[in-house]
Length: 239
Image 1 (cartoon, rainbow, N blue to C red):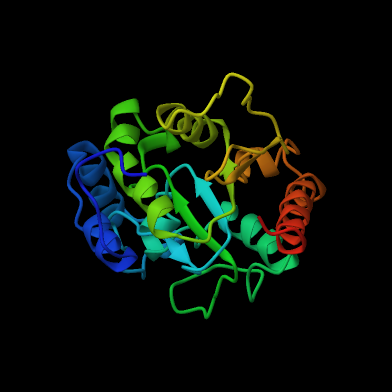
Image 2 (image 1 turned 90 degrees about the vertical axis):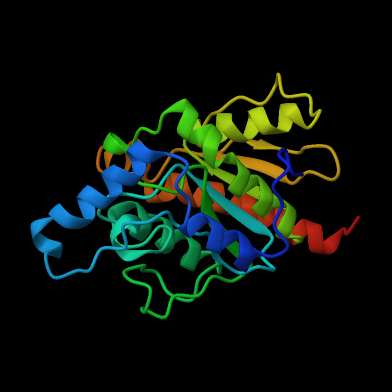
């Protein structure tokens, strides 16, 4: 599914390229500044401060597609969805539905393992105010689209938030998929034509959404029940 001349032979090769990426100078400067200034409660941390690779089970059937690392979450810890409120909300759900071995995600050495799931994001550097620019999203597109190629078993993509969803839908349109009926709403579920994975949508588990009640535990569980049901049916009725 490569859309550029760049292709990677393995996830490890792709991840090495991600970590050393310098395509967005403003984002690189911002992440480096955050890593130096730090947040008081994390003053003893040695911030990661670089672009984030994906994380999870390379054989996973679920691909979780987020927006971007948090300045004091992934940008601090060096792992996707780790060390902030979004991470804990997501991991609790992944654990509840059997996709993770524990319900928390705090640091790279916390023993977290994903099962049948892989986490990535459309932007790999923490953006100011959690709002990446269109050009930054476009620059980073080479990475998650190549992950789709390398993750051979993905059967469903969970897009967290409208920006990730719309970005994924635009890519599907480029691949020749009819997308006019693919609209973002919470717990939306769409079957796409073979060989493309199914697509599911959720409000992003940001503190802004979870603390205001826009996204509740039960609402998030509804999404994962749909995913779980779909994956069970895939096993029962293989194509």
